Length: 83
Image 1 (cartoon, rainbow, N blue to C red):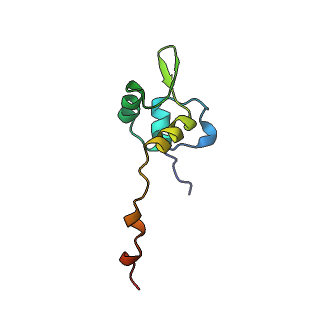
Image 2: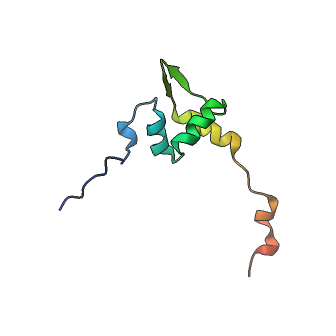
């Protein structure tokens, strides 16, 4: 028996290079409202075509690199390891 495929299932091969906020939200796991807020505050690059704001994967990757929090030294403290 064949499984039904959800209409929300996203495959990279079916998505364009420039994605809408909805498409990028499904691909990245970042909520639509968060993406819109990041674009409004100019923390996230976007391309404006008419009234549409479109996103590229590289814009999300750049934002993640700029905002990520690296692990602290205490995360690698050898005293916390159990023998």
